[in-house]
Image (cartoon, rainbow, N blue to C red; front, top):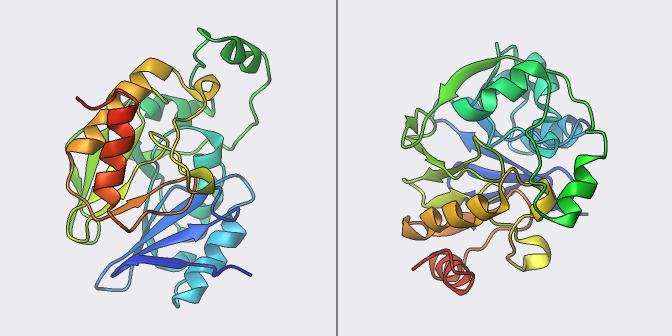
Amino acid sequence: MSDPIVTLAPSVYRIGTMGSFINTFVFLEPDGSVTLVDCGLKNAPGAIVRGLSAIGKDPGDVQRIVLTHAHDDHIGGAAEMIGAAGLSGAAMHEADAEFIRAGTLPSIDRSSTSGRIFARIPARPYAAFAVSEVLTDGQVIDVAGGLRVVHTPGHTPGHISLLHESTGVLITGDSIFNMASRMTWALSAFCTSYEQSKNTAGRLGDLEFNVAAFTHGPEIRNKARERIRSFLTKRGALG
């Protein structure tokens, strides 16, 4: 059985809510409180609670929830975790906040055949919840010494990546996948604008980091920045 929680850096952890297929991230504050990044699918809270328990924490220790974007495999468990933590809502980029408040999902890029097919499939419902904190590009959130917001739109209008500068952990969100330890783009059918998503991922190559953490797939520790930049260069996203 895999560990319920994996250490990425001092006070930074990954919880696999479906193996490493869908991940939630944990930032531990010096006072013992916790920030969660992403909450997986609707059934993910059980895995999140088990992961927190492994480091001696529970939902009552969660002081903030940050969401990288408004897709149900990132926000499906958010309403339950918000309630369990006694929070008023979650933090996310202003461009995706409207979807959360309405309980809807962003539009799908219909420029590809797969996009047109997926656009006809009814979206999985999720419980709407409040956005208590609206994030903007370049903002440093008061999380474990500072978590920088990097707006990387295209997967959704308000998709963000997050850089924890003090430990050098980069959370790519869905700008880059690492399924089966192989970096790829997100499927075009799940993007609002596939071309924009690929282009804005190039911003990640300009950042300084030591560990690349992915919402989909295991982290990269060895030469993480070099490998991300190599992927982006080969795919034409980094000049």
